[in-house]
Length: 341
Image 1 (cartoon, rainbow, N blue to C red):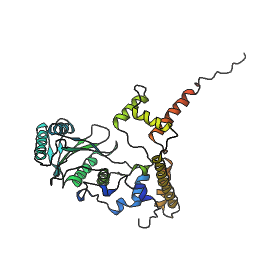
Image 2: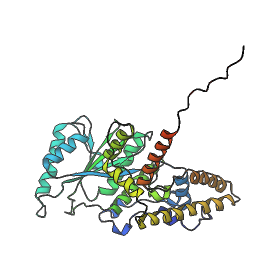
Image 3: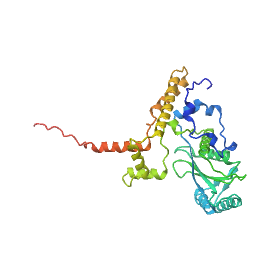
Image 4: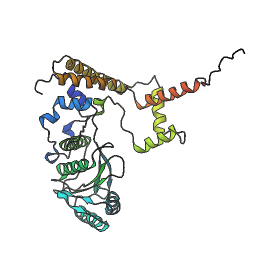
């Protein structure tokens, strides 16, 4: 709404972690279609406060030669059991179609006079949403994302997987573009891709956002899958702790070590949370029912924001809590006082 009272600090709270100017490959075809109602400060604040699902756009790897490319395409097609889709809805089914596509891509890549022997042939991207998201709409939004981002510049194919709890798409993009330009995305490109995917989902009636961690009060980076599995085994006492966790715990325990970066993280979180509190107060003073309702949702969001601590501090705290619990005497059944008969 035009008269929405916006407190200072919102832009900093939702600012991407990298500068958009550093984007290397995302140009006009990858721009996000932002309607005023969809991307207004009020709309974004409402989605953040309600904790709508966050999109995931992740680069999972690259292929380096024809065999690698063919194997990867076969993997995302589940060895020919799933169709893979290209631009304009073109469907490729079966092992032979997948092998032919790999040969066609490699023929053009090998013909490039600037090709390096160790250069990548394709880029592997995963688009994902949390469990419970409508699979049909996720599939269609992924189709729109691929077309907007790469349709005018690079060949691509994708496969939609529903064999896990969360619907996801494996998107494979040839790094050699139609005009000979190579695809080498930066972090700023990934941020724009997240915004594009989230916008495509919202256009199809799926609530989705693409905010930086700081806007949600999160300071820890997402874990690598292998590290998470190792930590789970350690928690179940069936495996050793990871070197990463050991190093993080030692770093947290070294109180004499200067951590200027940690002070910046805490200052940034203080600024973000101060904005949310000020915004909640401003909304609570509004005479409008919709502002009062948003203010209450924002207050609940603030109360549920996680504590500001690094991975090492979290692990050290968890270990100390375990020790405290183990030091407590066991609580056995209390003896009933005997009765004199």
